[in-house]
Length: 159
Image (tube, rainbow, N blue to C red; front, side):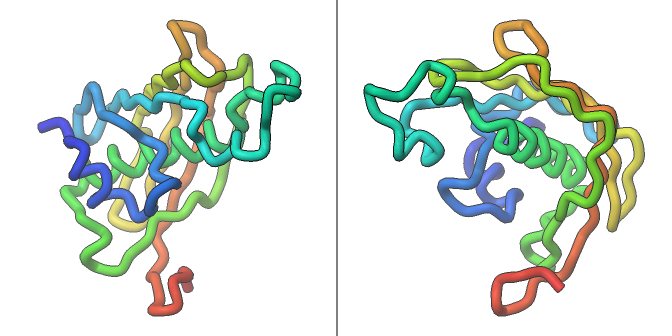
């Protein structure tokens, strides 16, 4: 079953406005996932820009492309282990990025399409690879991302 919008908000430990996945289009637990994120002018990263900003200033930040890809990876990891980590107080955290290349940019009106492959997973670690495309053109390639879990405290940070 492909996660719906309510599932995204339940499965990702991020609150608005940091949920950066809009839909899961394809999911094979234990293998792969394709998810999308629409880039819009209402993103908080554009808050300070106005009509005088150069066109290049409207590029979606690369750090948010990585975050959106990472959130897509978390959805694949959770689907693989049938885990609702929010119920256990466990928070997934990015630990390592290797061979990450940015090959293009996304702008308001573009749709990021994340293609995530699960290379290894266990209950406390996952390694993924893949790429992000806009309109069929790869804008980011990820050789390896490793995520680990940490226990959330009542103060809202991971120990």
